[in-house]
Image: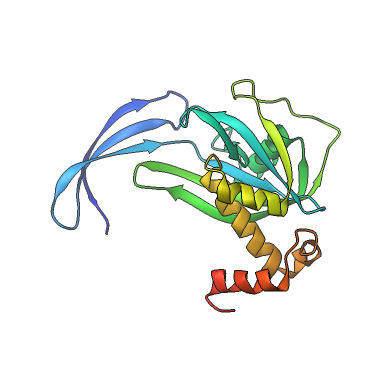
Length: 210
C-alpha cells in the first residue's frame, strides 16, 4: 500500500549530480509513523551483448559496495539529463566491451526498491561488431576484465556463482526467453544448445504450461 509522506529531510547530496540521501517521515496504511531513508542515484543502463556465434559477454569488475570482484553485465549511468537511455547503452557497451551493436532490444526497466530510487533500462545487444574508432576506458572506474562465454556456460555462471550480479542473472534468463520465443532469434537456438526438451521446460517456466 502507499505510504503517506508527512515530511522529509535531505541529509546529503553531491552537487551537480542526482546523488542524494533523503529521510522521509511516513505513515503506512496501518496508521504507524516512522522514518524511511531513500538513496537517490543517477539513471542508468545495463546491456547484455550476444554475439552471432551464440557467445555472450560478461565483465568482471571490483565493486566497492560488495568489497570484491563481481561478474556482471556492461552498463553505467547516463552522462546527463539530456542523454537518452539508448545513447547511453551504445556508449557503455563500446566503452566497457569494445563492441558496438546494430540492434538494441529493450528487455525491462528497474525503478528502485524500498531504499533506492533509480531508473535503469536493460537491453539485449545483437549484431555486434568492433568499430574502427575506440572509446577510452573510464579512468575513474576499476579495470574491467572481459569474459566471452558460450551461452550455456554463462548461464551456469550466473546460476552457480555467488559473485554474479542479480542483473546478470535476470538478463541471461530474459535473453533465453527471447531466443526461444521470438522467431528473429531462431538462428541462435542451435548455437546455444537449446533442445526441444529444454524449450518445453522454458515454456512451462515462463508461461505456466508445456
